[in-house]
Amino acid sequence: MTQSDQPAPGNLEGRNILLGVSGGIAAYKAPILVRLLRQAGADVQVVLTRSANQFVTATTLQAVSGRPIRDDLWDAAAEAAMGHIELARWADAVLIAPATADLISRLANGRADDLLTTLVLATRAPVLVAPAMNNAMWDHPANQRNVGTLADRGVHVLGPDSGEQACGEFGPGRMREPADLV
Image 1 (tube, rainbow, N blue to C red):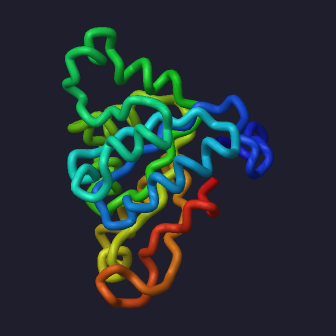
Image 2 (cartoon, one colour):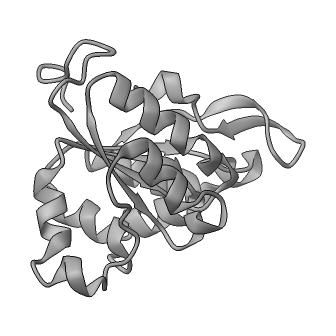
Image 3 (cartoon, rainbow, N blue to C red):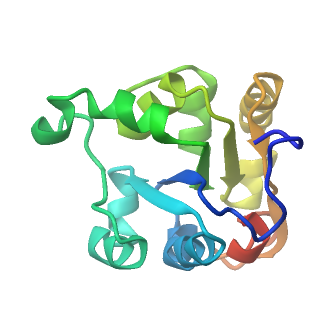
């Protein structure tokens, strides 16, 4: 969202937020983020990547979002009506948290090989990414180039934070806490 049309912090009343969750350990924070977005008044539609399903379940996210979870570009029921285009139009903002190095790379290269990346290409809504990865991956020149490409295209890069990581190392790469993303 641009600064002029962004509601006051904590007030997302009437906003449609498409939350993309990619496959990193920080995906465990997604249910908390959904709950906080809903408490702020947003309607939240969660889209999982295939890898995200390894870290957090659709059942959990459906319970906290109150909406069926989307995770397949080729869902016959949803796609009969071009569901990915409908979702892209529905969203007032697309927030991807966590955004892994792989997903950031695919977005920077304009790939549309799953539902989430296709939605990002199809939406006119602001796109925000919250990177989450090991500090060496974050610092890698290829990743920095990809993040720069996204920023140059108007994608809002939220973080990452520095601190202890799941691998036991310290440094930049931690996804911002859910409360800091709302």
